[in-house]
Image (cartoon, rainbow, N blue to C red; front, side, top):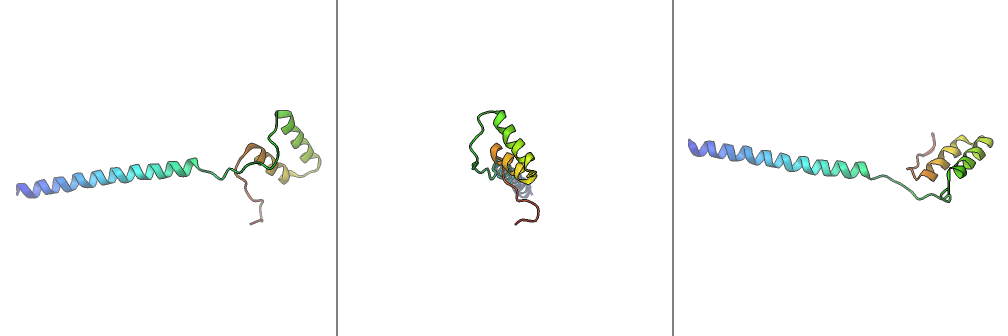
Length: 88
């Protein structure tokens, strides 16, 4: 009877250890996914100051190119690009 109890305790300990290892692996994978993104280099020269960003903003607003403004600012800031609505 003592051997059966010891085996059950060892089995329970092994399961706890495996669950802990799986949680560590899951945390590592989730951390990698969270910190990775599709950051693409800008095709627009990096602005030297806030005035240049304002110049881009003013030009696009003057031309009433709001979608282009969004894409330009996204590119300047180095954020992941999102396709416009209806474009795949």
